[in-house]
Figure (cartoon, rainbow, N blue to C red):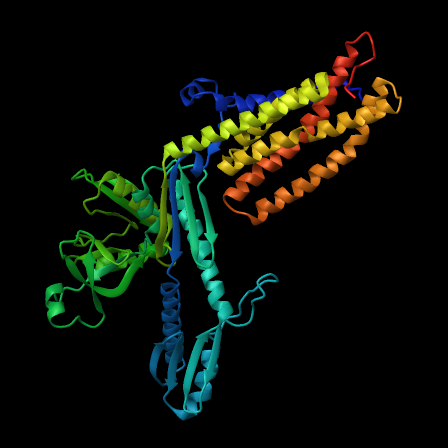
Length: 537
């Protein structure tokens, strides 16, 4: 058990040295790391929001707006379906949480009902969600009133899908800002938590994250001005829109959308070649380019509006057909505003608007205080453990302490290599690991004491102590590792940070406390003339 072949010694030492090498960059400055060769380890552990400061936002999705869009879509489907089947109807409207329509002719009631039943779609459901069935509950009365009501599982599925889509959209937007390791996750039924470490511009973050980015291109109604429309009435098929420039500027636009953001494939910040002002260039897919080209060709000389989130960014006049599927958006942007708008458009629109219900900014000073407190706690814990082990086990305690220091290097090295985020609970996990790391050595050393009391020779007692303690060490650490995995799986945010450091610490502790100390003891024994080793009893 105490014998190590040459290749085993090489592997143990190689793992230990690599761990320390990967941990070393965390002791160096960023400027120094930029000077060293790229093939050397140069990654540092990312610090979480609570350690380096940053922005914290809690967003809530407007589910009423989300469902209203769904109801509008169902109403349009009802209208189109009945018209295609030439079924007369009246009174098509949205009533609370359902859509109602009355079949005009009694002889067409059954036909219309069967046609509308075809609008109901099967829900996918799953074993865990327990959902399933149809997304619409469709009922009729004898006088021809048909009611289409979204089912509860369908509403839940739509909200869940919208939240998942919003999280991915927000993640794309935040990633475009160049930040590292943002924490974006769902909270509750319709809330999203966004934590961005190291980002010191919360107002810009709110604009990036909270903007719906619903883009559309619509023709301006030339028949009437906005002032005249408010005094009289808005023409049918048109609507009054405000301008993002403010100052009461308004436009009357056709409701019909020429092209929307779904056909957008790319957008980039740029500069106008004539005025040198910041603009945003965009590119449509094939379908969008074809529709945009056709409309601009048919409306040369007329103004069209670029609408973002219900407000007009600009309303230029179509000078010539735009047939290439590309164009630019101008609107007195700054460079940062143009960049942010391109990020919003490139990441896609949110399914519904998000409201900021909680906002916190963690300053770097608080993060520095947290790091200092964590460092003090780690140092106190480390000194206490080192002192106790040396006092209790003497020379073998020195071996255990050396392994403990290597263990800390391995933990930091693995965190750096994985580019994991270290949070304050993560530091707590490391401090806990310091206390737990010597448990295996205590078990081994106490087993050696028992064997010595039983009259075995020193070498036999040491060999037996390591071999018999291995099963107990594995049992204890495997159960703790399983608990850490469950915490990581079910937990979120700080709990995950704690689980990550605890999991890594368990694996490295078993390696250093058992394998590394056994190697140290084996090498030390081979250098001794006498095989009588004094172990405190």
